[in-house]
Length: 249
Image 1 (spheres, helix red, strand yellow):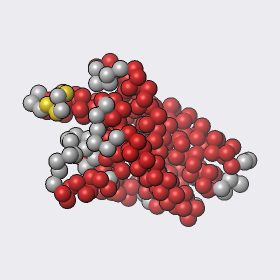
Image 2: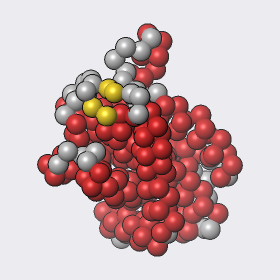
Image 3: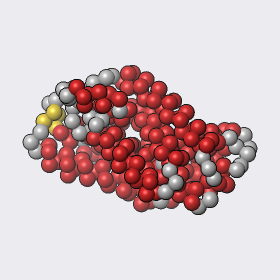
């Protein structure tokens, strides 16, 4: 089997698994909707940001949240694959481990893109997405964010040996990345110490990218966000690939 045949086979397998596990799809959509309508609706009654409703302001951040949560949690499937011996069968196959990682990354990113696309459709229905052009502009940009976040999840999954350990790391990685990304509040006038953390957080640029694509407003600009996320993806993908090479079976 060639390198790209191995990548393709693993990618397709991950897509099939995603569609078989309908609970993942449902939970991936329901949780963001709760944020939009419960949190956004509650705060939106008294908060206006940049001349728009709070729900519209936070919608791109919630789309980014769905990408983040779906991509990072995808790393846990490495642990389950190891427990079920599926990963052992894959890693002993005559395919480089970097191909295994790339197939996994593409699979996780594809899952995240499909989840986020469902949210965009809902956003179109409720008016959170201004129109069809913004919808189609957001799709490829979502893929960039998803590749970056999936690589982080795979780094964690490749270095964890139990779901409990993975969940512990998630508490110190996922929630801070979300809360300090500007998904729920503007980042322009933060205190200096928080501003440094926000700018070091790759999710900040994912949220800004979604806001630029969907609302035409942001802090850094689409080109800057894409460059930062592309560089971050290369760095995280390299680390994840090395983690796969060192992973014990």
